[in-house]
Amino acid sequence: MTPLLEALRQNAESAVDDFYGRILQRPKSRVILDMLDAGELQHLKSQQVRSLVSMADPDLKPEDHVAAALRIGRVHAIVGLDKEELAQSHSILVDSVYRRIGQRVSGQDIVLLNQRMNDDLSWQLKAYQTIEDEQKTALLDIMRITWENTNYTDLIHQLVKRLDKHEEIAACAIGRPDDDGVFHFEVASEKLQDALDNIHDTPDTQVLINASDPRGQGPIGRAWRSGHIERVTNFRTEQSFATWRAILLRQGLRSCAAVPLHAPGHPSVAVLLLHSALPGGFVGPHQISFLDMLQTLLGCALDRLESMDGMRETIPIKNRQHLSALVRSESLLNYYQPLLDTRSGKVLKVEALARLIDGRRLLSPEKFLPALRLDDLLEIYIRVLECALSDKETWSRAGVELELSLNFPPAGLSDIRYYNVTKAALARHKCPPGQLTLEILESESVSLKHGQTTILSRFKRLGVQLAQDDLGSGHSGLTRLRNLPFDWIKIDRDMVHIRDDDDARSILHFLYQLIRLGHSMGKQVVAEGIETVELTEALGMLGVDLIQGYAVGKPMPADEIAEWVRTHHYQNGRALDTALPELARQLVEET
Image (cartoon, rainbow, N blue to C red; front, side):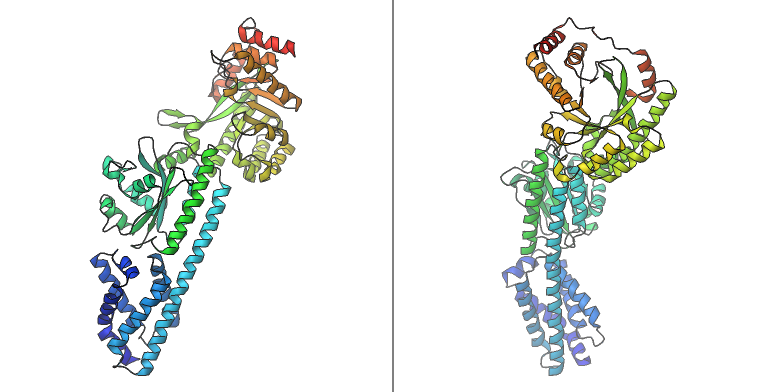
């Protein structure tokens, strides 16, 4: 093949020039080539010349040829060149080469070159099929992720992690705008995170969704407003990326697609940003279909999470990372709130409440839990439980015996690790399991349909007490109360709140029936959020077992609990002559 190799070395460049001149007349190919600047087009031609010359090399190993063809095929697939256009372009290239060297080499050499070029096309098409198969696998994995997650934070972390594995995607991120219309990335792949770290957090670099501001004219702002996927085919030539261009190019990112996520007919709730390492990514027919399916899957998933109150305020990446780090530091503290036994008038139990110290601020769970992933929640549970059991031993040595109650995330009912660490901690601290109550927040994710009673049953066999927290907060709690093995029910604070203009008798009547229902099912009843002695007396008269709230005591550090319990004694009957206890007395007598 030496004459063939020499002929190609002399004529490959002119053959490639002829080839590009001809395919520029083809609309599909021209669209792709027009996405390149002059330097990129020249680089592409040089690569084509080298590829042609290599196919005449007598020392070309089959495995090297296959690897090179697959790599080129993947590039063609990713930049959106469809299979039919690839095949037509191949025929044009063969013809351009033959015009230059057909009369200069033997027919045998031409046949051999033609065979290698056909093999090259075959392996390129194989690469197309591989990427299409990967798209299908990715969509199946993402479908599973969307249905398994009821936590927005975990869903977006798992989504980004899975998309990072997809060959067509060099980096990705997802985020939402805040109330001021400033868009914040909430999770990003490592490469994009590096780019974000190099963007100074200044007004000039902010991404907005407002159409009247130039910073809202990029793909994210356009996608958010239109509800349609917006693309940037080449960062080198896109004017709206002037601020970000150099940083993104340094990270090897060349094009992007902004995918607005929303249920059909609804406004956008988030935007998924996908980056390609090649110009022209996400414009081919298979990429378009892939992104459309991705948009539908994730839009429906987020709509479901919104309906379950699984999405809250926008939390930027750095804030999420900061809070996750605090959870694993000494900044995580336990505070304890007393629960009053209405019959004895004594505090026999406290609820352990997680708090985070962030600088000078003491953060309550509603400020940091929405930012955390499931592994963060497990870390909090382990540390709160361990600390509470240790504090319980300290109080006991001081002569104060208290039972413990702590929050148990619904995710723990599908994660055996929670049971294992609970069992081990109780044994290590020699705490009788019956002195621990786990409060399970009422949620749509707590359901017999998910087989979660298996883990609940393990806790029951262990002897741990179980409480349904926030009964009446908006889900089908009574069905779960009937079917799941709870020992306690905790009435949501909103249900016991009585305003001046409320019909107090009607509210107390409803609470009385709820308390009686709980007792008839063998459950004990806790009322939380109680702020007045008057309401405390009324609920005690209606038969509630435990009272929790500022009327009893505020959450406090562990070192204040023993002294507080010794010195604070609740006296029943202090407000019996006021309106609410009198109404409660009448209700009981009428029944």
